Image 1 (spheres, rainbow, N blue to C red):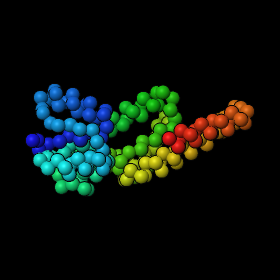
Image 2 (cartoon, rainbow, N blue to C red; image 1 turned 90 degrees about the horizontal axis):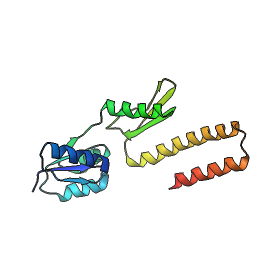
Image 3 (tube, rainbow, N blue to C red; image 1 turned 180 degrees about the vertical axis):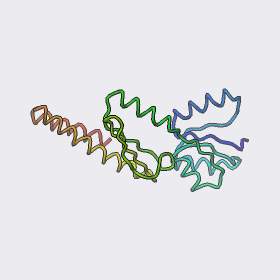
Image 4 (cartoon, one colour; image 1 turned 60 degrees about the vertical axis):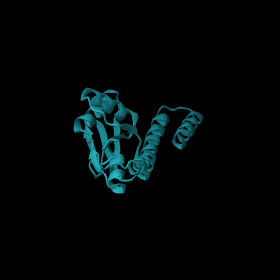
Length: 170
């Protein structure tokens, strides 16, 4: 029985954690689960007193369990490297949508070399779909303007809108 459990919210974090545990020669159970599922697992794991996790899963574990929760934060360098990759790929509008315990709790817009970076924190998981829909609509409007400027036939523009709506409904 272990008193420490690592709950990775997704496979990428689990993979990094596995490598770190091997390098440090530690034997800590690691599972992939997030939010409500992670909370249920934590509650069932009576021998666990300390849980290591990240993001919204940390928020939920702190709120719904009486375990000691260790939060693995994200560094500013991680965020800036991601912005840099997108900028170098030609993206001019970037949105960082993350739990407000990972990024600052206030929405803001930062302009860096003709690239607009929107900071979009959320406090509960239902907010994510709302934020994505807002940004989808903004992208759709920009796309429609571009397609109109290209003088494309109206049926191509309508088909593009239809396809984007299908993607949004997935």
